[in-house]
Image (tube, rainbow, N blue to C red):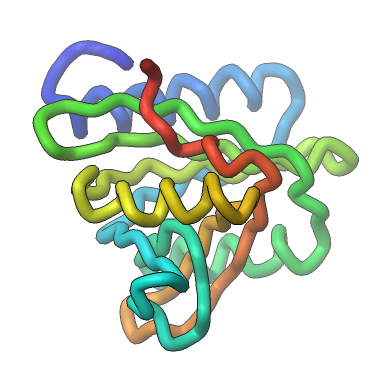
Length: 154
């Protein structure tokens, strides 16, 4: 990640990645999560039986995301993760290769709260990214086949 505070570096990295994709002809949408939490099925932390990271996003970001998700197939995902102190900072890149579209999400989550989620994901072989509005209205769900996607580098 770039220089500055970990959060500033995360935002800078997200914008650099978006610029790189855009220069290659991709349509990009950058989203800054206002809050991120981890949900698990095992601990009963989620009444909807979800497993993964839940990102709360602004209404205008949700409005811009809706048409991309409706028309797209985001089949590729990457995560660039760094841990500073007890916080995991990540840029999640969701790609629709057929339409050359990418959604990039900058987030920060308390690593000790996410640990149970990552452990359960490893056991189940899947993890998801959930985007929702502040009032809890779901915006989009992205399933990931790689349960270690959000694990920090060793």
